[in-house]
Length: 460
Image: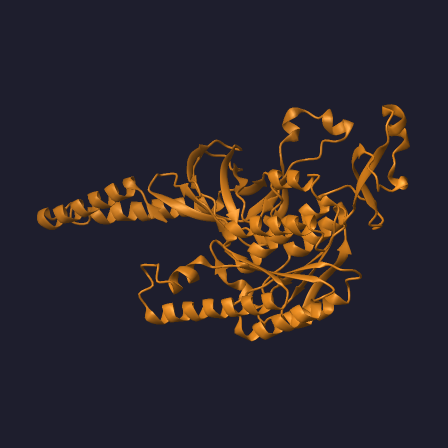
């Protein structure tokens, strides 16, 4: 309950009458009791009226919610009562969503709806139920405002793909409320248009058949030179031009990319707005989409102290959807990471040479030796690449660049943290692994650039 101006004026008037009664005596001596009683009765009537008011809150999504990307929703409040209501409300989002939430005050007519648009940024994968929405109702005597917590129901657009639905009146096409509580499934982010266009570039991406034959791909025609193989002569072009023409080809390189995602205790470390495993999941989803556009095969294994979930190598839209579904339900496990057991498990699933991208932390002292053993196990058949999202706060604290790093123990811990990461990186690089460590906003361009260079150099 929140008292409004009318109630405060009434209370002040009651107090004045009480003071006057003490000075003047009868008949004003007990009049303040009547005023106070009337206020209490009015507040009780407002309370029971507000409790019996029928309001329905519904959530209307505008599309798929992607991790780390701003998404739009609509909060609808529907007045199912027979009287006018003064409603003040603001959306309340799930705990792992961020962004400014607007507020609206509106007078609803009987059976009238009101919608409020708002934007939020999901910061965690998986299913997120929406909490009950607090709504403030104005009392019928304008003495107080009363709070109701409305369960938030899901709302969906009706299907209009049939002739019968197309012939329905316009008002019948309005979103229909589903009698279930609203929840949002947050998926990994998608590849940006610029990167998708790069995947279709002729410098490596190519159209492949369903069979991994690894044959020859046509590149250009040129004039015949002494020493060229007679089998390379293009006789049709030679007949048209009147001189010998040779077909230049390049070996079609089909990459096999396998992702290994660390979901151990350290993956829950907050780096910027999201956890380490959330940053890695977004990067894997984008790389898998890039690989699928390029015709590569890809798979994934998640692990903590032991392998958790796996998807065997494949390609195509259905396979990409399966990988995204697996990533959507990734979460941190309360156990120490064991990358060696993960590499032992995935090496049994790789029938040919592959680029193995291991997403983990480099500063874990316990796992440093296992990372070295895992690198030795993968080399020389496979090419391992370790990808680690760096926390800039730790780097700046270790260098003494942060004004709030006044605690000497915090600075010492940050320096030791960085020393451990540098040692691990140098050790696995000596053993033949590629290591990419960068801040969240810089790591994706570095990984994609290295992938293009590996393909151009036929390193995998």
